[in-house]
Length: 401
Image 1: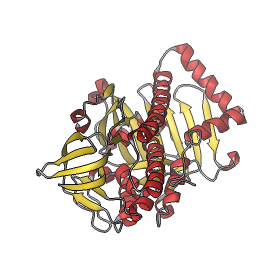
Image 2: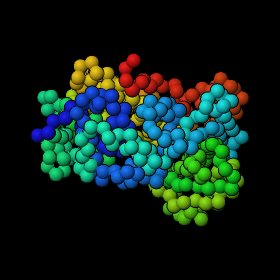
Image 3: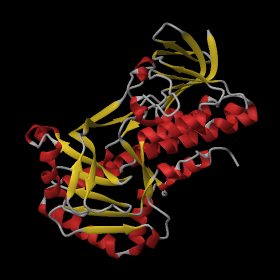
């Protein structure tokens, strides 16, 4: 049976970024294998479903993490967010945020998932990691000194520590007796690329409507569009890009001029998932395997990066000092911090949904007054900007000082 100090399950955005963050420990001898069912990347070709045609919004805090990883050519792949407009359809409430006026270089940036995957692979492919692509973990079994890992082809591995980064696709947590709390929002997220008559110039939009939020983010010369559709009404809404353009213009307006093009969209159900217990002896869950959030606040991957950074700092530090992976006590302390962050971030997302989906007249009036108050108050406006950039949460360096 092959033995590894660390087994990373999942080679998507979280798994690959974790490997990059663990470079100091890996170069010092940390024995790592990464297991993922997708084919091994070849140069720029990334075929994992994690690196599909969608895009990801990175907060300023997330960009700090990637800057610490020293990923080549990252800046060229980013579409910076310089301005944010928040509005409520049918109400006068309006909030505009300008990065430079608030003293920031940018609020964040958007990157194509496929580009991020290619850049991550360029960063990590030469590291002494045992890559096990085209493989799938089917069972985890606690052992006295770690975990027994069973692959679909029958191969058995021993791991001192397993970190689950599989995006919640598998049920591996069940083999350890862990539960997963799920809440359906009874809605679908539709994601597409949209072109407009006027260039976005780094401008992002969050528009709350009676059906749910519509977000528009800079994405190259186009914009990436995410809008929420209640499941009960999905069948009655326009079902082609051409028919949907007038529907979107009616609810979103022409903030960037007329909508000139809309791609076919991908669609997925909106469900919040949280694993109440993230850690056990020889096991830790990160990313969507630990928590999947509603995209209204755009914080899912940014939340994952905070947990990943805390974990990487612990592992890098412990391996540098003791030449081994952290103890259960150390991992459990980090897991508690990650759990608190998850609970806080999920709570904010739920409150936004409840506030802006309510049709009660007094609440709608209050929303409008609240947005106008924020727009006129520089300190409150800066607080909203800091929250959106993720800068209200502490993220450690990837290695101890």
